[in-house]
Length: 167
Ligand SMILES: [Zn+2]
Image 1: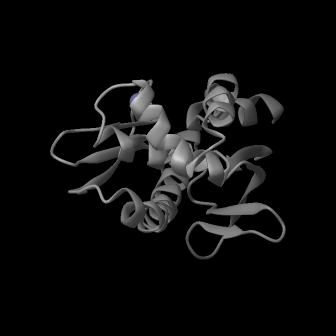
Image 2: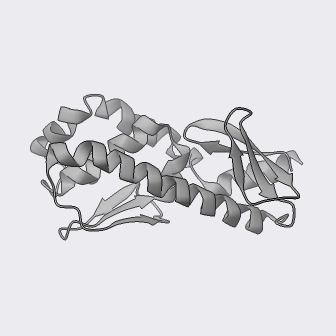
């Protein structure tokens, strides 16, 4: 297959197996997908499925870290295929996160979680908003510019296309 994909900021090689479901071997930086899923679209949907499962777990961990500090009311947390944003929120306390974030290093994800959580207190990008973010993520400027520079690399389609060119 010869394709690689980012997982929490690290490059993993996607390879096929004839048994079991999608599996991530962290030690050898390999992601196994079943060989029956041989088309780009099937590989992509298998990868998205496992990324989604891991992302749900990771988001609940990050929220558990920061929610007691900010004391905001969180209603639902959803993972969405957002086109141009990393996260969004509503005044009802619903937080949405872009699945592609699962390709970013974990501190970047933590920054986006805190960013959206702070929007539940400040529905704008005012100084008070950024001051609230800075309380738990003092390096927020670095993370914001990281996303502006590298954000386009966090994309399932991008990686699949790269992989096909290498074959
Ligand atoms: Zn914002």
